[in-house]
Length: 176
Image (tube, rainbow, N blue to C red; front, top):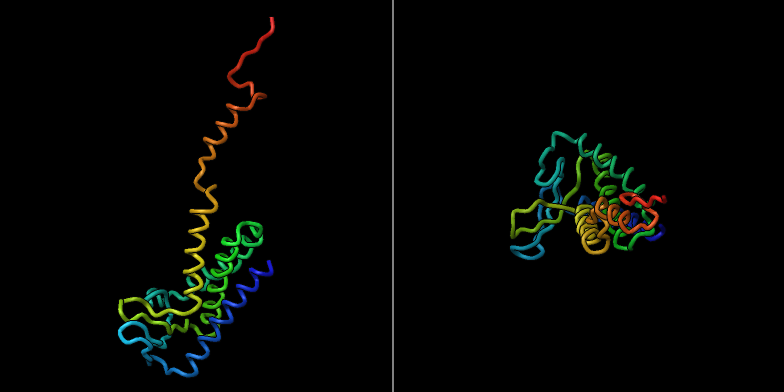
């Protein structure tokens, strides 16, 4: 649990420090090109989801994030002995959720600043990266490490009952 707690704290710290630096050094809506035609730092205030969608429903993001911040650590603790990929992915998702929740609670919006300029993609932040990377890691864990989600439990139960010698279902050993 110490490793998972460290990942959560580190992801929140990196997210909040990077946002603080952007707010202090880059005026709102200004942009600094790092790689021409590819990547820029662009300071925006995101009051919604990607591309600012649902910005008038701030309470939805607060409620959903609050639920995630309560439920996910419980899940992480409950399954703490699973593969390191599971714990790392959950920790990144939790850290990202906390980072954006801090912004929503104290600022009323999320500070975004990372922009790929070669495509029409929303401006994002470190917390968003943590959530996305954690989600992909969780998908990899589910697909390649924990295949129990894909096991047909009904079929497995039937097979065990058929192989169980103490199971007398379907057999009639009557003594005359």
